[in-house]
Amino acid sequence: MIDRPEEYEKMDLAEKELWWYKVLHEQTLSVIEKNHNTKEITILDAACGTGGLIHYLQHNGFENIKGFDLSPEAVQRSRQKTNVDISLLDLKD
Image (cartoon, rainbow, N blue to C red; front, side, top):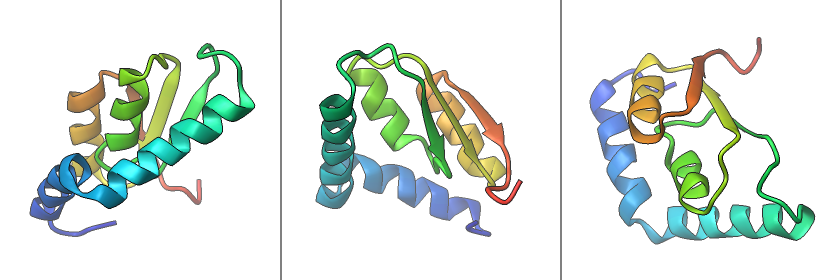
């Protein structure tokens, strides 16, 4: 977990602009589509951060997505960006 909320703002911007995130999201989508012939699957994004991947998957037609993160700031940003059920949880729980 990042201790400074301003770091989540930077992460949020990076997910929109950096090639690394774009490639990561494209590759994740490719793996999902290769292994499932429907968009009606349930996807869980563990440690979802600011919700960039969830947003990308929603944009590509997936609707049944849930996520969780340890950081209240990240959860808040994810909820605002995605309108998805994002929980505040520790991965260890």
